[in-house]
Image (cartoon, rainbow, N blue to C red; front, side, top):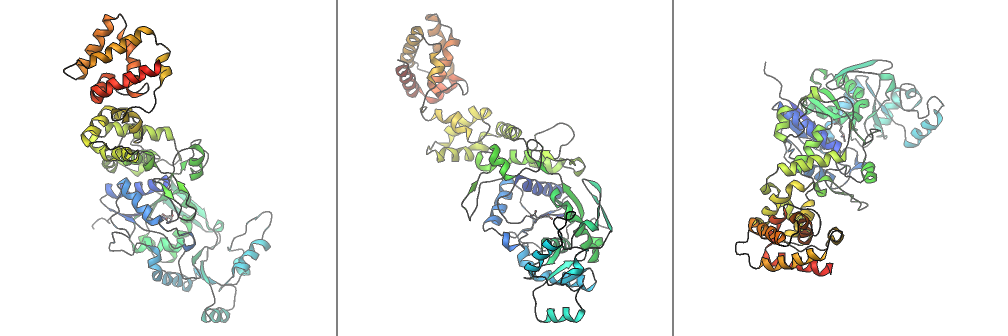
Length: 509
Ligand code: GLU
């Protein structure tokens, strides 16, 4: 018998920006699919029209593209199991809900929103502060289980607004094997009679997810741990629909936790602690509020993906740096942790720094070019490549290339004069005046020659060259940073070098 093709899906709801936990779910799906030569599917779960946000679907697709996680089947790309947007699959779901009613596993409920509100008030007790529509309450509500059959028929005939709810059995144990968490069990008494089909004929998430995982032949479901409490409902639905033999395997991924480990990382934590939680910038179309993303902050996609992969997984060897291809080869579910993973922004930046160092200047060129363009500075590619090669080991974010490298093309906007002044004296001043004069005489403008000239002059004036290097650096770049100072001197050129030394001397008085 031939092995089943692995088919996994990332099934986001288009309700706003994509949280890094969402991208990690997409990533683990993608890695599993690649490792097992399967298919990675993007399904847009947009049945809750009240939460639909324009632009969010496009944003999700752009995020996946930025991360290099291209789906094999998606709303954009199509595929044999489409449509890939649940709202476009609306006519497919009713028949499954009706089938459940026929088999006695679901029922019609006619309660109005007011009646539901009333229920929450009248059944509220100290032991049960938020009563739910469940086995204890369903008999007291208006549904096809509590009403006489002819009344139900009449209501249905008159097109009375109704939903279809699952009839959760009392006191049954639902057990399943989670690929990450092992044996999990729930008692059905703790689960309410969830709505499956809404009054407008749209399925809820619970019905749609089961029907679509079935129709799309999904073999494994990887999703966040926050969906674990919904698993018993889904498993009961697979059973009740008589589809159990096609049920996918389940894997609930550990949460990404706040830096202090207390609770799930939220967008608000990012705002509060000053780091992004979304993959890319997201502007809320209603409020216009901008939430910043890793990409725009200056993260490389390779680093972002590498960092996310390690939030909940490792290969057991202590290795930390993996490309997407390497992850596809090495990833295994058996090494995904059960416990939540604390998010650490400093560590995220460490990944980015390492990835900038590993990248070639050519790979970084376009990204650095955009940083310079935003600042209104256009530099020929060969010059930018030269600068990137010299400073990339010093950059943590792509935006750092401006601070670390703009002095090659533009005089500093300000100078850290106190850094020079603390050890400044008349002899040093004389030295720099002579040095700037001598620069005009250098015939072979290259850093070893400039350095030699600097050292010879220092020796002739009895000053340690080491003591003069820091002032020279500050004069050329504006501060105490940057690559080897004579290489900077060579690159910025004679005229500019003389001008920066003279300008600083003037400011030092
Ligand atoms: N639509 C759900 C979400 O937004 C997906 C849950 C699942 O993967 O089953 O996260």
